[in-house]
Length: 173
Ligand code: RP5
Image 1 (cartoon, rainbow, N blue to C red):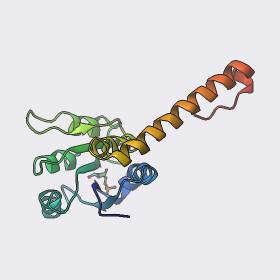
Image 2 (image 1 turned 30 degrees about the vertical axis):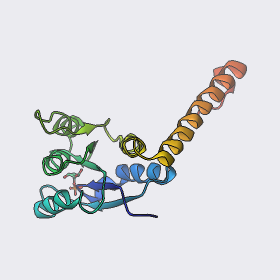
Image 3 (image 1 turned 90 degrees about the horizontal axis):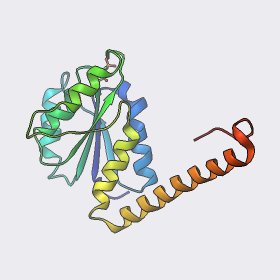
Image 4 (image 1 turned 120 degrees about the horizontal axis):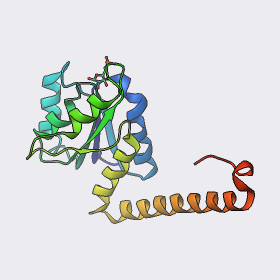
């Protein structure tokens, strides 16, 4: 794959079970990415280095996932002019996920983090691709195809439910 344009980072290896969904959809949409672990609390210097060098090494968007006292996305956003998409992770140290959501969502004025749903790494990947696709025709085309396929799936399941009734149709979307 070509030089990464999306950087996926997460606070811990335990976030990977969720964050891999961002990587999977970026692969499907043929958007180049890099993925690593950067902890705001356990490796603060690494976080500063990552955020400060992200633009100069060619990244266009950062996806940052963390759970509990989830400071990584906001801190990274404070040190770069790249857009940062935050993924609140329902981690083992999280109280129901609300702490993760609110720590990422409720940023002070001036430092936005585009926050997706709890464990919403797939949507973070799609949103990153859409940002890339705003300037890149090939990515926009891949997104168009992806959305057409989603539409087809819904129409097929609607047809199946209408034809066979809810008992007979396969539930799977
Ligand atoms: C956060 O604490 C990480 O992003 C992770 O979601 C959570 C738990 O980390 P581990 O204790 O599993 O390493 O900083």
